[in-house]
Image 1 (cartoon, rainbow, N blue to C red):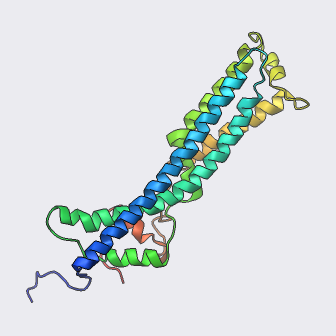
Image 2 (cartoon, rainbow, N blue to C red):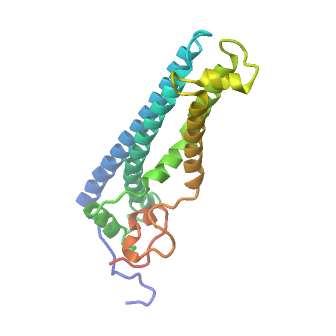
Length: 242
């Protein structure tokens, strides 16, 4: 054997029936990622519709209460938590589909055949045996806030403040705003404080997760803690995989 001949240690030969089976596997993974992507759109739509309804009710007349805007904020927070959970599963199926695109279909497009010399098929097989999500709930929450929900929460906050400012007549002092913010026996300053805390929390989550890692918890992660399937999807091909 020549010295520069490729090593056969990790070679995997795919028969025509294997290629057909992998094609169906890819279709299944792509379908599941598409289903979860559609579910993400559903929760976002619920949030937009809820915000729209609360704006319509609160600004329907000068005497209408601003409470629907507060209630909408809580409902949108629930939708956000649901969407973050759905995003974790969407990301899970998307990673598998991308690995097949990168190492199975990609080489075929340039006439090299399915790449089988780097152990990607073994890593994918292990992921089927021991599946794991690739992003934490907090990181998924931050991503959805930065992409969509920051705008929704901002619109709600501006609308609520605007409602108190102009209805039933333009406010002339901050004390008057506090009086209008009161909800029954709950004083206005408590409502304001709760609202500020609510918005500070989502802002903190969005900022804290900007540089959050996925799959590998720091550079010194133990080998068993490495998310190898995610490394493949990101283009980091391991030199050896047993």
